[in-house]
Image (cartoon, rainbow, N blue to C red; front, side, top):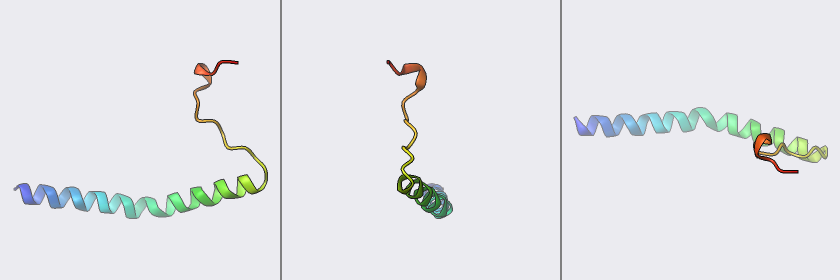
Length: 52
């Protein structure tokens, strides 16, 4: 039973990585294009926590 659980976990991890690879590639391309156009990336800081 443990072997089946380990194989299932590995399969799920592999499947998620394969599924997300194209999404990550497109996201990187969009970020590169925005940077090329001079648009600053959005801050990851929560606006509620930002001090001005």
